[in-house]
Amino acid sequence: MLGRFATFLLAISVGTFLVLAPTSSVEAARQKYKYTGNKGCKCHLSPGVWEGDEWKQIDHSKSFKRLETPEEQKDPKCLKCHATGYGGKFKNPKLTYLKNVTCEACHGPGQGYVDVKNKLAKAVKNYPELKKKYKLKEKAKKAFNELAEKDPMMGRKVQYDAGLIVAGINNPSGKIRDQCLECHWEDPDDPDKCPKCDKDEDGKPIFMDYDKYVKKDDHRDVDAIDAVIKKMSSGDKAKWKGYIERDPFLSTKIKPEAKKKKKKKAK
Ligand code: HEC
Ligand code: HEC
Ligand code: HEC
Image (cartoon, rainbow, N blue to C red):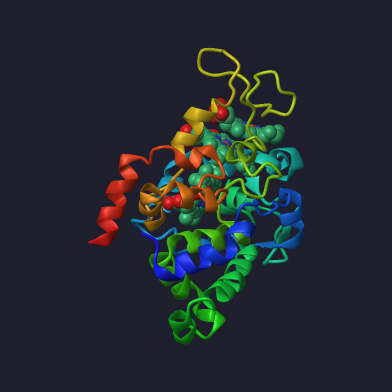
């Protein structure tokens, strides 16, 4: 159920929330923010955390190994899909790409998460008791966790408005599928496909079957927000439109493994 503060916020902001926050293009985010590398995502990559565990299992985490010769490892064409951030800016100025398809390939450059913190600091101002407790921006993460617990919809709004948390959100369409299509292809005859993998084991042209592919690597787990959405009244659903189901995929079932992982973490 939504708390008192949430109800208050809903009341004052209905009009604004009906409109989707405009999404910038992937290219715009790339030019604006720097890639930090997986070190910047280290909490998500610690053992037992579902998103990191699933990522380590699938070949995105090993995709750079496919480039076997020094020529391939310098070829912009190969790097565009087998590495992350090629053509973008990096926290370490010596880098021109990150090896493998890393977190930032789908979730956007890590530096952009500063925006999450700034917007969070603003959102927290609406909660007197949080504001008192978390005066400093540096405490943003703790403040966010508490905000997400007290008022999960507000937490999600802050994430979505920051524009980088949800995979695919940097695309003009805001759809996860378009993020995948930066490197994958749905038409076996697409001219922009991998020159090395145009046949599968049976000699048939290979292509992305989106529903199957995305199930392999969505790493969603059950958050406080999922419980809130389940119990929402239809009125609240309308008010938070765009923050609940930006992409229809986000309303699909969460994997049983993810639920198990969550339980383990809670112990
Ligand atoms: C448009 C994006 C794209 C480009 C460009 C690209 N790759 Fe790939 N590559 C992929 C994807 C995606 C896969 C996995 C395909 C799948 O499993 O659906 C892949 C798979 C591979 C594989 C494994 C093949 C297999 O089936 O075992 C090799 C090797 C490879 N790429 C090398 C290269 C090299 C070398 C280059 C540069 C000449 C390159 N790729 C350019 C996206 C790309
Ligand atoms: C191939 C693209 C891709 C890569 C690479 C990727 N993610 Fe995701 N991630 C997704 C998709 C798709 C979702 C589900 C939609 C959403 O909630 O954003 C998701 C969801 C998440 C979520 C939210 C989970 C939830 O319960 O809603 C977190 C946190 C996350 N990813 C972290 C990471 C981290 C950390 C890495 C690197 C270890 C990573 N992701 C790598 C595509 C990706
Ligand atoms: C930055 C480019 C890039 C993006 C974006 C990307 N992929 Fe990939 N993907 C690859 C490459 C390259 C491979 C091949 C890795 C290998 O075989 O070494 C691959 C392989 C895969 C595989 C096979 C891996 C396995 O272990 O079975 C799946 C499934 C997959 N991608 C799903 C997705 C989905 C779903 C999305 C969107 C949410 C996505 N990818 C986004 C580049 C990308």
